[in-house]
Amino acid sequence: MGDSHQNWLFEMEVESRSKQTRFINGISAKLRRPMVTEPPRHPYRGAPDFWNDYEWDEGERIKRFTANFLSVGGHVQRLANMEEARRFIADKATELSARYVLRYNEPELASLDLEGALPNARVSVWNEDPAQYWKARAAEADIGVILADYAAAYTGSITVLSSKNKGRSVSLLPTVLMAIIPIDRLKTRLGEIMVHFDEGGRESLPAGIHFISGPSRSADIENDLTIGVHGPGVVYALIVG
Image (tube, rainbow, N blue to C red; front, side, top):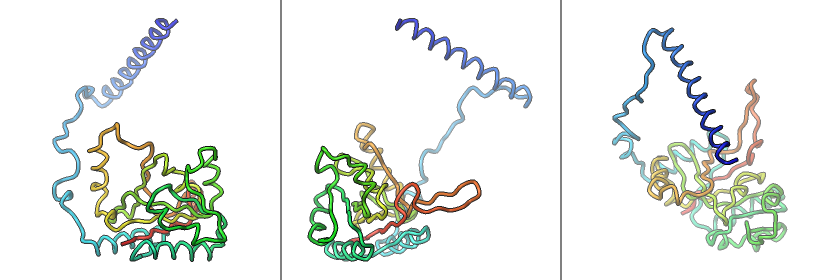
């Protein structure tokens, strides 16, 4: 049974490649030139040296990230420390009458003591109780609180990596997202972020790498724009430090 199945797959592949060759040959004949069989040479790979050396100072990174994030409907708040971040989240939760808040399971976010700051809201920690169905809990959340792994000023993008303590649902399903960006994680270019994934190799890649550039925006074929269909409709980037 196994051999016959493998033989069938091999025959199907041979037939498919034969059809592909006949199709391309037909196009080549009409263009009156031979089919290209060798891939084109690419003498240059990746970004040019001048772009790899391109870098803004801290003030410029904050300014450019803020402008780019605001331009797509996001919100940006500059905060001195995590205590200010705690107060900001608490004030917004009160303003929005939030009843349920979900956060990443990380020490930096545990130090915020959101449970104490939000006496009128239930605060849950992702994957703290393995018996819970956490995707459903995330969908119920009014506010999701995450810690960014990186951010790029040039594109106004926040990068978050998923893990067992950092479920992607926390950034995707709540109505409002609060993304804390430590200032040392705010880079100029996406290339400064991507290089870490290359250096680590395929084995160390997380299950998910997400780039958040403001609230969810979707448009149909008639360009009717809708906010919040495929993610939070309100996103706050809190630049801390």
